[in-house]
Image: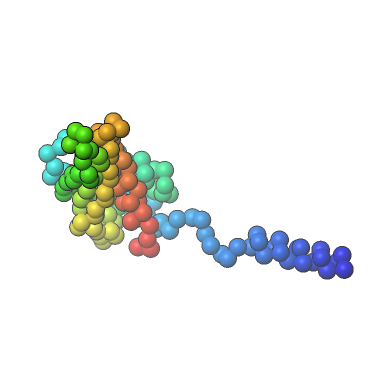
Length: 165
């Protein structure tokens, strides 16, 4: 009886640690080792958004992908893009002072990842949209909302790069 219990316990342990052959690694292309991130362009009048987005995307690629950031002439691929628009909308007004309770910002960009060795377009999104919100009554500013927006947008850009090219 004790022998059967030991056998059952061993089978359970093997089953638990064997998994279902799922991988915890993210599916980035092994063919691309290095990426150059060009400065994003902007059609928006607000200054600095293109710098913030470029920096956020660069940092996200460095931390979340196996790719290295390099100068353009050494890159396997080049990521480029343009901020097309940033639109704000108000969600509810405070009845006491008629100020907005929450403001939502929609950031729309165009995005392209090009293989510099072959000239192939690996990823192209002519309209990539991200939404961020901030709450003025608790002290959030447009700058706070854009910081969250650029970070979230950078995360989604890197997620869009997770593919079998």
